[in-house]
Amino acid sequence: MDDAYPVAFGWNFSVTHVLTAAFFAKRAGDLETQFRNTEYDDSIMDQHLAFVTGSIVASVFFLEAGINETFSDCAGEFIITPTIFVEQLTQKTRELMGELWRSPGFGRSSILEKYETALKLASKKQFSKDDSLRQDVQIIISLRNYLAHYKPERILSTFYGFEGDDRAGLGKQLAKKKFELNPFISDDYPPFFPHKCLGYGLAKWCVSGSVRFADEFHKRMGIPPRYENVRNEVLAV
Image 1 (tube, helix red, strand yellow):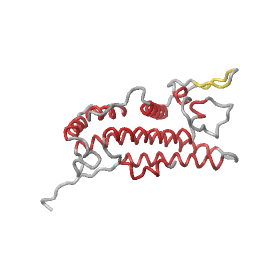
Image 2: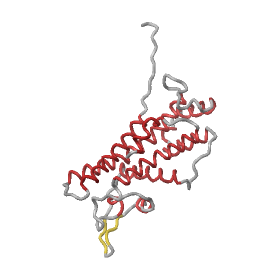
Image 3: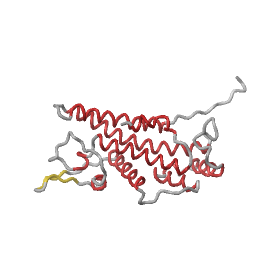
Image 4: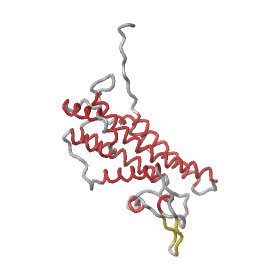
């Protein structure tokens, strides 16, 4: 074994994350179907909220892991260089992306900045600020950040009903989107965001929105998505 050498393998967590997001969304939907017109206790509400928020968070995990894996592949960190997922890129593009991946400060870039940088280095069309796919993903990421860095907000009871702070402006943005609201929350209480939003409909919207954005990114880059083999399972939520 004196002439043995180490072999580096990588794990594609982006696929795990998108499957997780889809699984949690489906479980939230199952609970809504099962208990929509029947009695339920707080434990059902707790499970439902856990599945919905878990799906939202995992959708963003999928996006970030996916772009990190693409850059990592270009850097040649694992056994096959280049991997089948980036071999369609030019050698120059892979070198530029690999060099940037190894730079100390790149890890601090935002998720969307990483996607935009990849497109720029590959001389591909970038997402414009008014692109609906980009806008939806920005909302999904902001929603994840709202949940991850949550700061308690007031709910005000007024003559006209209930109002929330909505400091992040997410309520106004989500109100323009089409998805089913949380059936466990009364129409009279509480405010639209976050309570009425946090249901299967929003979880499904986040999963599909993140996949649509990733699909378009891979199309523009001219590379195959890692999640292709689980696409049908993911989109069946």
